[in-house]
Image (tube, rainbow, N blue to C red; front, side, top):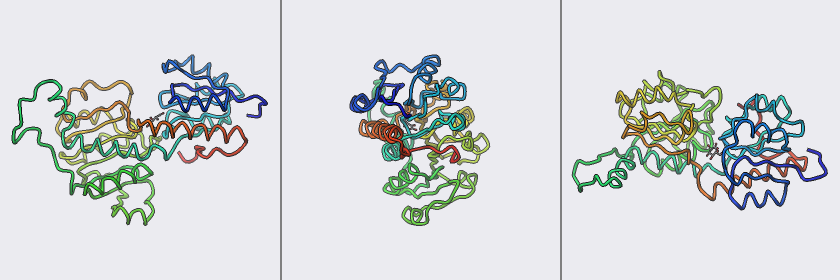
Length: 329
Ligand code: 8YV
Protein backbone atom coordinates (compact mmCIF):
# COMPACT_ATOMS: atom_id res chain seq x y z
CA UNK A 1 0.00 0.00 0.00
CA UNK A 2 2.70 2.54 -0.94
CA UNK A 3 0.59 5.72 -0.95
CA UNK A 4 1.94 9.04 0.35
CA UNK A 5 -1.33 9.88 2.03
CA UNK A 6 -2.83 7.83 4.82
CA UNK A 7 -4.49 4.61 3.63
CA UNK A 8 -8.26 4.51 3.31
CA UNK A 9 -9.62 2.06 5.86
CA UNK A 10 -13.31 1.17 5.58
CA UNK A 11 -14.90 -0.43 8.63
CA UNK A 12 -18.07 -2.36 7.83
CA UNK A 13 -19.69 -2.30 11.30
CA UNK A 14 -19.76 -0.11 14.40
CA UNK A 15 -16.77 -0.87 16.63
CA UNK A 16 -16.18 0.34 20.22
CA UNK A 17 -15.60 4.13 20.33
CA UNK A 18 -12.01 3.88 21.55
CA UNK A 19 -11.11 1.63 18.61
CA UNK A 20 -12.79 3.89 16.07
CA UNK A 21 -11.12 6.99 17.52
CA UNK A 22 -7.66 5.43 17.30
CA UNK A 23 -8.37 4.36 13.72
CA UNK A 24 -9.40 7.91 12.85
CA UNK A 25 -6.08 9.16 14.27
CA UNK A 26 -3.98 6.69 12.33
CA UNK A 27 -5.75 6.21 9.01
CA UNK A 28 -8.23 7.86 6.65
CA UNK A 29 -11.08 5.93 8.19
CA UNK A 30 -14.69 5.52 7.09
CA UNK A 31 -16.89 4.35 9.96
CA UNK A 32 -20.36 2.87 9.95
CA UNK A 33 -22.21 4.79 12.66
CA UNK A 34 -25.55 3.16 11.84
CA UNK A 35 -24.05 -0.34 12.35
CA UNK A 36 -26.40 -1.52 9.62
CA UNK A 37 -24.91 -4.53 7.84
CA UNK A 38 -23.75 -3.50 4.37
CA UNK A 39 -25.74 -5.10 1.56
CA UNK A 40 -23.83 -6.79 -1.26
CA UNK A 41 -23.75 -3.65 -3.39
CA UNK A 42 -22.42 -1.50 -0.55
CA UNK A 43 -19.82 -4.10 0.28
CA UNK A 44 -18.67 -4.31 -3.36
CA UNK A 45 -18.47 -0.52 -3.48
CA UNK A 46 -16.33 -0.47 -0.31
CA UNK A 47 -14.06 -3.18 -1.77
CA UNK A 48 -13.65 -0.99 -4.83
CA UNK A 49 -12.38 2.01 -2.85
CA UNK A 50 -10.68 0.80 0.35
CA UNK A 51 -6.95 0.27 0.76
CA UNK A 52 -7.79 -1.90 3.76
CA UNK A 53 -11.22 -3.24 4.66
CA UNK A 54 -12.21 -4.21 8.21
CA UNK A 55 -14.97 -6.80 7.84
CA UNK A 56 -16.65 -8.91 10.50
CA UNK A 57 -18.28 -12.32 10.54
CA UNK A 58 -21.46 -10.77 9.07
CA UNK A 59 -19.75 -9.81 5.79
CA UNK A 60 -19.53 -12.57 3.19
CA UNK A 61 -16.25 -11.91 1.37
CA UNK A 62 -16.58 -14.63 -1.25
CA UNK A 63 -14.95 -14.89 -4.68
CA UNK A 64 -17.64 -12.70 -6.28
CA UNK A 65 -17.08 -10.01 -3.65
CA UNK A 66 -13.31 -10.23 -4.15
CA UNK A 67 -13.88 -9.64 -7.88
CA UNK A 68 -15.15 -6.19 -6.87
CA UNK A 69 -11.87 -5.32 -5.14
CA UNK A 70 -10.04 -2.40 -6.60
CA UNK A 71 -6.33 -2.83 -7.39
CA UNK A 72 -5.50 -0.70 -4.33
CA UNK A 73 -7.14 -3.13 -1.88
CA UNK A 74 -4.33 -5.06 -0.29
CA UNK A 75 -5.59 -6.00 3.18
CA UNK A 76 -8.66 -7.54 4.77
CA UNK A 77 -8.10 -6.92 8.49
CA UNK A 78 -10.97 -8.94 9.88
CA UNK A 79 -12.42 -8.12 13.29
CA UNK A 80 -12.70 -11.63 14.78
CA UNK A 81 -10.83 -14.90 15.08
CA UNK A 82 -12.78 -17.02 12.59
CA UNK A 83 -12.10 -16.32 8.91
CA UNK A 84 -14.65 -18.66 7.36
CA UNK A 85 -16.57 -15.65 5.99
CA UNK A 86 -13.59 -14.91 3.71
CA UNK A 87 -12.61 -16.93 0.64
CA UNK A 88 -8.93 -17.17 1.58
CA UNK A 89 -7.86 -18.82 -1.67
CA UNK A 90 -9.54 -16.12 -3.78
CA UNK A 91 -8.00 -13.38 -1.61
CA UNK A 92 -4.58 -14.99 -1.92
CA UNK A 93 -4.96 -15.22 -5.70
CA UNK A 94 -5.67 -11.50 -5.89
CA UNK A 95 -2.68 -10.71 -3.68
CA UNK A 96 -4.86 -9.52 -0.81
CA UNK A 97 -3.54 -10.31 2.67
CA UNK A 98 -5.94 -11.44 5.39
CA UNK A 99 -5.48 -10.93 9.12
CA UNK A 100 -7.63 -11.90 12.11
CA UNK A 101 -7.64 -11.31 15.87
CA UNK A 102 -6.70 -14.59 17.57
CA UNK A 103 -5.89 -14.99 21.24
CA UNK A 104 -7.76 -12.00 22.62
CA UNK A 105 -11.17 -13.69 22.67
CA UNK A 106 -10.01 -17.10 23.89
CA UNK A 107 -10.88 -16.66 27.59
CA UNK A 108 -14.22 -14.97 26.95
CA UNK A 109 -15.32 -17.70 24.54
CA UNK A 110 -14.19 -20.42 26.96
CA UNK A 111 -16.11 -18.72 29.80
CA UNK A 112 -19.22 -18.70 27.62
CA UNK A 113 -18.74 -22.38 26.83
CA UNK A 114 -18.74 -23.16 30.56
CA UNK A 115 -21.81 -20.96 31.04
CA UNK A 116 -23.58 -22.95 28.32
CA UNK A 117 -22.51 -26.31 29.77
CA UNK A 118 -24.01 -25.26 33.11
CA UNK A 119 -27.09 -23.68 31.51
CA UNK A 120 -28.10 -26.76 29.60
CA UNK A 121 -27.25 -29.34 32.28
CA UNK A 122 -28.81 -27.37 35.16
CA UNK A 123 -31.74 -26.02 33.12
CA UNK A 124 -30.95 -22.37 33.84
CA UNK A 125 -32.79 -20.91 30.85
CA UNK A 126 -35.88 -23.01 31.60
CA UNK A 127 -35.90 -21.89 35.25
CA UNK A 128 -35.42 -18.27 34.28
CA UNK A 129 -38.29 -18.48 31.79
CA UNK A 130 -40.53 -20.01 34.46
CA UNK A 131 -39.87 -17.18 36.91
CA UNK A 132 -40.08 -14.45 34.27
CA UNK A 133 -43.37 -15.66 32.85
CA UNK A 134 -44.96 -15.87 36.29
CA UNK A 135 -45.31 -19.65 36.08
CA UNK A 136 -43.35 -20.44 39.25
CA UNK A 137 -45.68 -21.60 42.00
CA UNK A 138 -43.00 -22.44 44.57
CA UNK A 139 -40.24 -24.87 45.43
CA UNK A 140 -40.80 -28.59 44.87
CA UNK A 141 -38.44 -31.51 45.55
CA UNK A 142 -38.58 -32.83 42.02
CA UNK A 143 -38.96 -29.62 40.04
CA UNK A 144 -36.46 -28.70 37.32
CA UNK A 145 -33.98 -31.43 38.14
CA UNK A 146 -30.91 -31.18 36.00
CA UNK A 147 -27.73 -33.21 35.98
CA UNK A 148 -24.53 -32.78 37.97
CA UNK A 149 -21.50 -31.90 35.86
CA UNK A 150 -18.91 -32.93 38.48
CA UNK A 151 -17.33 -36.23 37.48
CA UNK A 152 -18.66 -36.14 33.93
CA UNK A 153 -16.66 -36.60 30.73
CA UNK A 154 -16.25 -33.67 28.35
CA UNK A 155 -15.21 -34.34 24.75
CA UNK A 156 -13.65 -31.28 23.17
CA UNK A 157 -13.70 -31.22 19.38
CA UNK A 158 -10.76 -29.00 18.42
CA UNK A 159 -8.00 -28.54 21.00
CA UNK A 160 -6.67 -25.17 19.91
CA UNK A 161 -6.42 -22.11 22.12
CA UNK A 162 -10.14 -22.02 22.95
CA UNK A 163 -10.43 -25.79 23.40
CA UNK A 164 -7.53 -25.79 25.87
CA UNK A 165 -9.03 -22.80 27.74
CA UNK A 166 -12.33 -24.69 28.02
CA UNK A 167 -10.46 -27.74 29.31
CA UNK A 168 -8.68 -25.70 32.01
CA UNK A 169 -11.96 -24.25 33.22
CA UNK A 170 -13.79 -27.59 33.08
CA UNK A 171 -11.08 -29.23 35.20
CA UNK A 172 -11.97 -26.78 37.97
CA UNK A 173 -15.51 -28.19 37.90
CA UNK A 174 -14.25 -31.75 38.34
CA UNK A 175 -14.91 -32.73 34.73
CA UNK A 176 -12.53 -35.14 32.99
CA UNK A 177 -11.12 -33.99 29.68
CA UNK A 178 -11.16 -35.87 26.39
CA UNK A 179 -10.39 -34.39 23.01
CA UNK A 180 -10.22 -34.98 19.30
CA UNK A 181 -7.99 -32.83 17.13
CA UNK A 182 -6.35 -33.10 13.71
CA UNK A 183 -3.05 -33.38 15.53
CA UNK A 184 -2.39 -34.65 19.01
CA UNK A 185 -1.58 -31.72 21.28
CA UNK A 186 1.66 -30.97 23.12
CA UNK A 187 2.36 -33.76 25.68
CA UNK A 188 2.90 -31.12 28.39
CA UNK A 189 -0.56 -29.65 27.80
CA UNK A 190 -2.05 -33.15 27.71
CA UNK A 191 -0.38 -33.94 31.04
CA UNK A 192 -1.43 -30.61 32.61
CA UNK A 193 -5.05 -31.23 31.63
CA UNK A 194 -4.91 -35.01 32.25
CA UNK A 195 -6.55 -35.13 28.86
CA UNK A 196 -7.31 -38.27 26.87
CA UNK A 197 -6.68 -38.01 23.14
CA UNK A 198 -9.02 -39.75 20.72
CA UNK A 199 -7.74 -40.14 17.21
CA UNK A 200 -11.19 -41.43 16.29
CA UNK A 201 -13.88 -38.78 16.69
CA UNK A 202 -16.52 -41.51 16.37
CA UNK A 203 -15.12 -43.45 19.32
CA UNK A 204 -14.93 -40.32 21.47
CA UNK A 205 -18.45 -39.14 20.68
CA UNK A 206 -19.92 -42.48 21.65
CA UNK A 207 -18.50 -42.20 25.17
CA UNK A 208 -18.92 -38.56 26.24
CA UNK A 209 -21.45 -36.95 28.60
CA UNK A 210 -20.87 -33.48 27.15
CA UNK A 211 -19.42 -32.55 23.75
CA UNK A 212 -18.08 -29.06 23.08
CA UNK A 213 -17.36 -27.82 19.56
CA UNK A 214 -14.23 -25.65 19.55
CA UNK A 215 -12.73 -26.17 16.10
CA UNK A 216 -12.77 -23.52 13.36
CA UNK A 217 -15.15 -23.84 10.44
CA UNK A 218 -13.06 -25.02 7.49
CA UNK A 219 -13.93 -27.23 4.49
CA UNK A 220 -12.75 -30.18 6.61
CA UNK A 221 -15.01 -29.38 9.58
CA UNK A 222 -18.20 -28.62 7.63
CA UNK A 223 -20.87 -30.93 9.16
CA UNK A 224 -18.16 -32.74 11.10
CA UNK A 225 -20.96 -33.55 13.53
CA UNK A 226 -22.96 -35.23 10.79
CA UNK A 227 -26.25 -37.09 11.19
CA UNK A 228 -24.30 -40.36 11.43
CA UNK A 229 -21.97 -39.02 14.11
CA UNK A 230 -24.76 -37.38 16.14
CA UNK A 231 -26.43 -40.79 16.22
CA UNK A 232 -23.33 -42.20 17.95
CA UNK A 233 -23.77 -39.93 20.98
CA UNK A 234 -25.34 -41.18 24.20
CA UNK A 235 -28.98 -40.22 24.79
CA UNK A 236 -28.02 -38.51 28.06
CA UNK A 237 -25.32 -36.38 26.38
CA UNK A 238 -25.35 -32.63 25.87
CA UNK A 239 -23.81 -30.80 22.94
CA UNK A 240 -22.47 -27.25 23.19
CA UNK A 241 -21.39 -25.10 20.24
CA UNK A 242 -19.57 -21.77 20.53
CA UNK A 243 -17.64 -22.21 17.26
CA UNK A 244 -19.63 -22.09 14.03
CA UNK A 245 -23.08 -23.44 13.27
CA UNK A 246 -21.91 -25.20 10.11
CA UNK A 247 -19.74 -27.64 12.10
CA UNK A 248 -22.96 -29.40 13.13
CA UNK A 249 -25.58 -30.68 10.69
CA UNK A 250 -28.30 -28.52 12.24
CA UNK A 251 -31.37 -30.29 10.79
CA UNK A 252 -29.89 -33.60 12.01
CA UNK A 253 -29.34 -32.08 15.45
CA UNK A 254 -32.95 -30.88 15.57
CA UNK A 255 -34.14 -34.38 14.62
CA UNK A 256 -31.95 -35.99 17.31
CA UNK A 257 -33.27 -33.60 19.96
CA UNK A 258 -36.89 -34.10 18.89
CA UNK A 259 -36.44 -37.87 18.99
CA UNK A 260 -34.93 -37.73 22.50
CA UNK A 261 -31.63 -39.11 21.22
CA UNK A 262 -29.72 -36.31 22.95
CA UNK A 263 -30.42 -34.78 26.36
CA UNK A 264 -29.99 -31.20 25.21
CA UNK A 265 -28.00 -28.62 23.29
CA UNK A 266 -26.61 -25.19 24.06
CA UNK A 267 -25.93 -23.17 20.94
CA UNK A 268 -24.32 -19.77 20.52
CA UNK A 269 -23.96 -20.19 16.74
CA UNK A 270 -26.21 -21.42 13.94
CA UNK A 271 -26.01 -22.55 10.34
CA UNK A 272 -27.94 -19.61 8.87
CA UNK A 273 -27.49 -16.78 11.36
CA UNK A 274 -29.52 -14.89 12.36
CA UNK A 275 -32.22 -17.34 11.19
CA UNK A 276 -33.09 -19.95 13.80
CA UNK A 277 -34.97 -23.15 13.07
CA UNK A 278 -38.35 -22.57 14.81
CA UNK A 279 -38.25 -26.17 16.04
CA UNK A 280 -35.17 -25.29 18.13
CA UNK A 281 -37.05 -22.40 19.72
CA UNK A 282 -39.83 -24.75 20.79
CA UNK A 283 -37.51 -27.16 22.62
CA UNK A 284 -37.12 -26.64 26.36
CA UNK A 285 -33.87 -28.59 26.58
CA UNK A 286 -32.11 -26.21 24.19
CA UNK A 287 -30.31 -23.01 25.22
CA UNK A 288 -30.07 -20.45 22.42
CA UNK A 289 -27.74 -17.44 22.41
CA UNK A 290 -27.23 -14.81 19.68
CA UNK A 291 -23.54 -15.45 18.84
CA UNK A 292 -22.22 -13.66 21.93
CA UNK A 293 -19.31 -15.95 22.88
CA UNK A 294 -16.74 -13.16 22.70
CA UNK A 295 -19.08 -10.32 23.62
CA UNK A 296 -17.23 -8.54 26.41
CA UNK A 297 -16.23 -4.89 26.17
CA UNK A 298 -12.67 -5.84 27.15
CA UNK A 299 -12.51 -8.47 24.42
CA UNK A 300 -13.94 -6.22 21.73
CA UNK A 301 -11.42 -3.47 22.64
CA UNK A 302 -8.57 -5.95 22.38
CA UNK A 303 -9.91 -7.26 19.07
CA UNK A 304 -9.94 -3.68 17.80
CA UNK A 305 -6.36 -3.18 18.99
CA UNK A 306 -5.28 -6.29 17.07
CA UNK A 307 -6.98 -4.97 13.94
CA UNK A 308 -5.13 -1.66 14.30
CA UNK A 309 -1.76 -3.36 14.92
CA UNK A 310 -2.28 -5.52 11.85
CA UNK A 311 -3.18 -2.59 9.59
CA UNK A 312 -0.36 -0.42 10.94
CA UNK A 313 2.25 -3.16 10.49
CA UNK A 314 1.04 -3.85 6.97
CA UNK A 315 0.98 -0.17 5.99
CA UNK A 316 4.50 0.26 7.39
CA UNK A 317 5.70 -2.56 5.17
CA UNK A 318 6.03 -5.24 7.87
CA UNK A 319 4.45 -8.66 8.12
CA UNK A 320 1.24 -8.16 10.13
CA UNK A 321 1.40 -10.31 13.28
CA UNK A 322 -1.92 -12.07 12.69
CA UNK A 323 -1.62 -12.86 9.00
CA UNK A 324 -3.80 -15.83 8.06
CA UNK A 325 -2.00 -18.10 5.70
CA UNK A 326 -4.30 -19.80 3.24
CA UNK A 327 -2.39 -23.08 3.22
CA UNK A 328 -3.20 -23.63 6.91
CA UNK A 329 -6.89 -23.98 6.15
C1 8YV B 1 -16.81 -12.53 16.92
C2 8YV B 1 -16.37 -14.99 16.50
O1 8YV B 1 -17.66 -11.79 17.68
O2 8YV B 1 -14.19 -14.09 16.34
C3 8YV B 1 -14.97 -14.96 15.99
O3 8YV B 1 -14.62 -15.86 15.22
O4 8YV B 1 -17.04 -15.90 16.26
C4 8YV B 1 -17.01 -13.96 17.31
O5 8YV B 1 -16.72 -14.23 18.64
C5 8YV B 1 -17.07 -12.25 15.47
O6 8YV B 1 -16.42 -13.12 14.63
C6 8YV B 1 -16.67 -10.86 15.10
O7 8YV B 1 -16.50 -10.71 13.71
